[in-house]
Amino acid sequence: MYTARLLSAAKQDIREASQWYNEQLLGLGNRFRDSVRAKVNTICQHPQVYAIRYAEMRTAVLDVFPYMIHFFIVEEQKFVIISAVLHTRRQIDK
Image: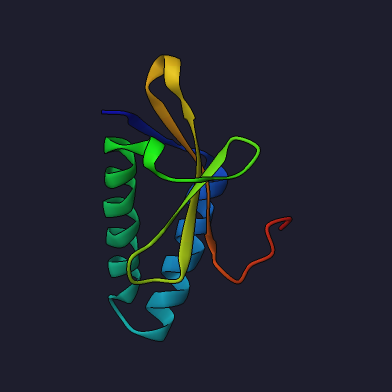
């Protein structure tokens, strides 16, 4: 099992998306956070099953929300570094 480390940019992505969803429907932001948490737990169990999208960056799509978790593996320390949680329509250079 790997340990997840979220970069501050990823935490900000989650906060912003959660706030937006809560503005749409009260409580929906919490469901978004729960979905992210569940997917991160799944990633930590078997991070190698997710395809490499670019360089060493892997991605995992959330089950319900149109967001993708961007991460890379630090095999030596058994870490998964979550670098971003982005909407699937967002330009990657952003």
